[in-house]
Each structure stands twice: as structure tokens, then as C-alpha cells.
Image (cartoon, rainbow, N blue to C red; front, top):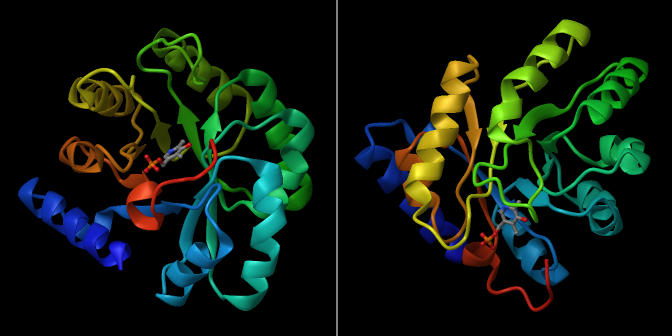
Length: 219
Ligand SMILES: *Cc1c(COP(=O)(O)O)cnc(C)c1O
């Protein structure tokens, strides 16, 4: 299946970059995909998945979790504060932290639950008005505020680079920003550019259509 090809390509890209393939986590992005395609990837033994909508995830993953052990589910799309508790019920990792107000609510919720998802701050590297994420110039202040007021670990940075440009320079930029902030994990790289992302240090690649096939609806 396509999953095997993707795993091979990840291994090759890691080796070519002088990296250990085990340091790269493959998140299979299952948004909008027919359930039987997702099920086939679960049957093949894969357990790490990503969704971009809280509600959509809530419609399919509780059932899959009952049938398959060890599912690790990542939210890669926007998080509204009114869906925060639902998101914390569903997800093991959140890649889309992008504002202070969310941070405070998250800290409160995590404290009352006693467990914290893995957290990435989303950076809008291309400063595109239509895209979510913190402006690159605001990252340092955001992290400082976060560290001064909250006691939750940030694992790394996430980005979706501008679509109409060579992704390499944006991946390099995110890597540098993470290094400057002492963060070690990088969520970057999708179906069309994950090898370039791995060459620039990606630790989490988010791959949808190259695993499941083209999406039939907008996602
Ligand atoms: C849909 C999506 C992906 C996967 O995109 P593909 O091009 O299908 O691999 C990755 N990251 C995010 C945030 C997405 O919304």
C-alpha cells in the first residue's frame, strides 16, 4: 500500500540527510477520507493520525480507538477556545497553538485534567493573511509570556509554508527559529514536500493524500 512507499521515502530522505529515520514521526492525515481508507491504514498497523477539525475527529476517532489500541491522534488544524475541552478529550497532540488567550485556557484545562497533550506552536512563516499561526516576529514574545506565566512544556514549532514558493527556505527558517528558542521538534512537510522538510530537520511530517489518495471534499 501507499503507506509502505511513504515509509520507504522517509527512510531514504532521512539517510540522505545523515539523520536517523527513527527520529521522524509519520502523522497520517486522515481528514475527509472515507472511513474504509483510514481503517485499512489502521489494519496495516499504523497508529499515528492527524485531523484538522475537532468535530470531524469526534465523529470517527472514539469508535476507531475502541477497535484499535494505541492510537495517537494529532490536531493539526485550528483550535477554537469553545472546543478546547472536546479537543483535549480527543487529541494527544496539538500543533496549532497560536495565541495567548488559548494558552491560558489550555493551562487551566490541563491542570484540572492532570494531563497535557504534546504541544507545538504554529508559525505563519510567510506572514500570509489567510493563514493561522503566530507572526515570526511575535514568536519570541509568545514563548516568553508562555514560559513566564505557565508551566506547560512546548515541544516545538509547526508550519505550513506558502504554497507558491520553494518550501526549502521556509523550512530552514522554521528550523532556525526553533534552534534560537531552544526547541527541538519541528512539525513540517506534507505530501508534496516532506523530503525537503526532512532534509531541513523535520521531526514530524504530516502526510495525507500521498497515503490515502486524493481527498474528494475540501479539507
Ligand atoms: C491536510 C493537511 C496536511 C496533509 O496534506 P497532504 O497534502 O494531503 O499531505 C498536513 N498538514 C495540515 C495542517 C493539513 O491541514
